[in-house]
Image (cartoon, rainbow, N blue to C red; front, side, top):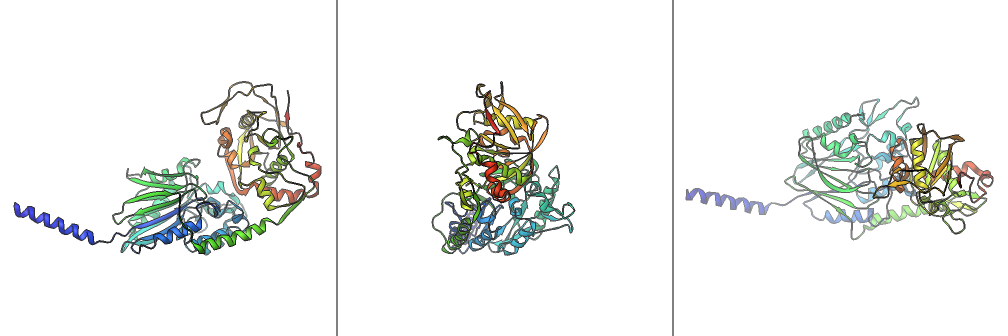
Amino acid sequence: MAFSRRYWLVLALCLALQGLGQVRADLVVLHTNDVHCGVENQLGYAQLAQYKKDLMKNPDDTVQLVDAGDAIQGEPLGSLTRGQAVIDIMNVAGYDFAIPGNHEFDYGVARLLELAPQLAGGYYSCNLVDLRTGKTVFPPYKMVAYDGGKKAAFIGVTTPQTLISSTPRYFQDDKGQFIYGFSEDATGQKLYEQVQKAIDQAWDEGARTIILVTHLGQNGSLPVWTSEALAAHTQKVAAIIDGHSHEQYERLVKNRKGQPVLIAQTGTKFQSVGKLVIDNYGHVRGELVTQLDGADAATEAVVQRKMAVVREQLQQPVATLPVDFVTDIEGQRRVRNGETNLADLAVDAIRYRLHTDVALLNGGSFRAPLSAGIVTYESLYRVFPFSNQLVVCSVTGQQLLDALEMGASRYPQEFGGFLQVSGLTYRIDPAIPSSVVLDDKGRFVKVAGPRRVKDVQVNGKVIEADEDYRVGGTAYVLCHGGDGQTSLQGGILLEDTGLSDVDALVEYLSHKGDTLAADYGNPAGQGRIIVGP
């Protein structure tokens, strides 16, 4: 018995000594999502590139840099180069893998197919399918070797909501038939099966670490197409690097066998950089990095060169204005409690560009006036510095009435949620106190008493509460409940156009030409919003 005990002690010591001689070799995955051209933020591509280089100084580790979509759209750097500048920056930064998010399609499928071969790390998506051939447009996954022969697979997944959140016609032929699909159905089952198929294929090729890189999101996504829903209906997945909903989190969820899966998302525009580490035992740990020291000189040089070109383009003239377009009247920010000619111009531009019954803009969107004379792109970006994205939604008359009531709830005080309108007129009776009920976060709940918004008309006809109206505006107001406008979140998203508020203004100014003075000469606007009993 003593011999047996001594034997096991010696064996344990030998194994321990053997373990001390082993080299720990990790797979380190840096990840971004929804950068939206935010190249000059506190964190940025140059800092990220340097971070990757620093991690690669450990010769035993394998370091990969991946992006979970929506990188090439969102600011002039993207729109003025149709994505090219961001692709060039991602290449010098050292991306190894990327997936198309819904906004990668904002310049059209044909344009994305032009850009894709130029991205050194490549685009991947297991569920973007050419319906004419039944084959995926991009490779479904990428295999990566690490730790002396272990294999990991990165599998790309693009939200099926792309068909409606981008421009639907981009995915159709000349006859209006869809020629591209995203494994979409009402139950989510087609998506789950398509992803599991890619997982199983990678597993059969020897991958024992499966990482899904998804552009699905959580908040605001259809429940059957969220990253958590995908995790719950698949297996063999170690982690999900997610995007789309602009959230920051790392959390554990369960797969369909009840096993843990780590999901991580980094917010938007470099709010953070994600870092996953898979050790040689297959264990996964993650963190969100919010501060990086140092910047890669080569990447920073490319960023500055691209931005210099964009800045030059921003100085290009767009139009010549015959009158001043104002935000303030008599010392008040009138766009936040009344009507101005700039507000009318901007919201008309949105309705014109999106071909909607009604267009809405919150008064807080406006950050600068436009002076008479030559207007440049830079001037327009001073008016709308946020590059708010434009959407089209189906909204009921009742939802519009509630939204107008919410917007007028603080009158005569200035309120960023005060609604500027096109295709619609209304009157505010300030003698009636607001009866809007808010929740503890300041969001609209209901109207509990008499309404102060009266005489609402849509294109000259009395609004019908149960009628559906095609409404254009920013995603901030129509989809995201901005300024507490939760009533509009009940609308149906018809189109995520990929256009910004500035894009609409540029086109409309060109369209209006010499008629601007006649239509918008009065600084107080055209009388769409009346105040009085």
